[in-house]
Image (cartoon, rainbow, N blue to C red; front, top):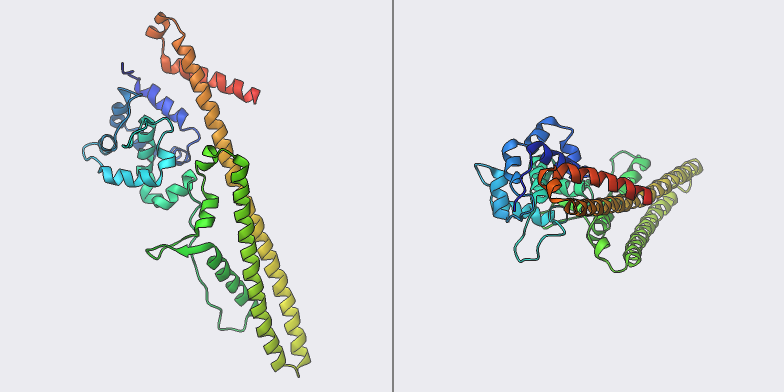
Length: 328
């Protein structure tokens, strides 16, 4: 038996379920996009049955309206954002099945795809870190050793952290990308500490690689410096100036490297903390929703026939969330 929801009730329910959704938080601040998201024709197509499963082709017809979106186009976005779009409770089948919330998420993706592109959408939902432009620099022709050293350091960091894909576009190296992915492996792992240990090992390997590259760079600089000093051995004043400049540059590079290490570790910690907080909130909400629905099922036939299920469920969800927060 299909359940028919009042349009305002359905919108309120969707807003509540998307409360912590990163794409919705962007859309709700812009009235035009929010109006497009809750277009009446689109909402009406979801009202008739909130518990059915849709194929990709059906989703394309709902999302496209008079001009259906091709299933192959939708599948491209689903494949790249599957952790965000596909529900955990989807039926096991060789075909992709979507619930009403999946279609809502696909609509938000469609509204933001031109602005954020696929890489930006991935970054927003936590599947991959924000892309970094792979810029390269050439040393200045002027005799400015401090500027040249900064440029060399920038090139070094780009070499360590970036690579190009088969189309020649810059992207993060696989090991860096895997560190920043906010993926389902943490939940599916039978041993959480082992996963954390694997990430720590990757970080240590990256630090070691950075140190090796730094040592090679220092060796090369030392060779150039010794040759330069030998040529100017008769000019004591110039030798003193060169030594002072080298000390300043070395100190600046050390501070820069230290700042890079701190920033990288902070970003990793923030990603992990944010992910764990989202998982915790999602679990609490799922549990509260389950308890609320169980309470509704226990209501008498009269109350269930004439009561507002969505209002009852939302009230009970908020009640159980408050209670779970207190217990936590």
